[in-house]
Amino acid sequence: MNRIPAFIAIATLGTLSATAAADMYKSGGGSLYAGGNYTFVNIDVGSDDADLGTLSAKVGGYVTPYFGLEARAGFGVADEDVGPGSDLSVNSFFGGYATINVVNESPVTPYGIIGFTRYELELDGPGASIKEDETDLSFGAGVNVAITEELSGNVEYMRYVDTDDATADGIGLGLTFHF
Image (cartoon, rainbow, N blue to C red; front, side):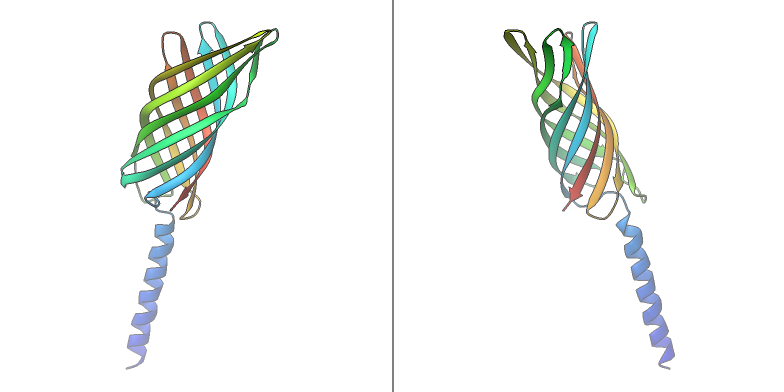
């Protein structure tokens, strides 16, 4: 008689631990998160273009498993020479975004992102410095990949600015911590 309850207890524990292991890699993570990205940015102005690099921080939360809100802010870390003695750089940028997440049973969560970004660029030349800022609708798509329950990696494409004067696109790589 004692063998049947022991068997049921062992089977139940085995099922619970298998479920917990499977949930560890289930996409969607915790409801609040913070992270950082390095982004390879391409700026096109007329027929000229420049390849820059930025670091950014992000904080956000999932309103539902499928819809989230986040804020980002960052600055440039890699400038480009665009002429004799002239250097183009990203001084700063910040924005607010909404995400649409394709939650599923795998560790991979594709998402779309849309919002507004304010970008400030600076052109340092011989004897002069010109700052230009743009605010525009931004959109993109990416993929979060769960590494553990609290940590995920991501890769994403963003169109930050698309005006008559310039476009700014980026491909970012980052880490996100879920709380």
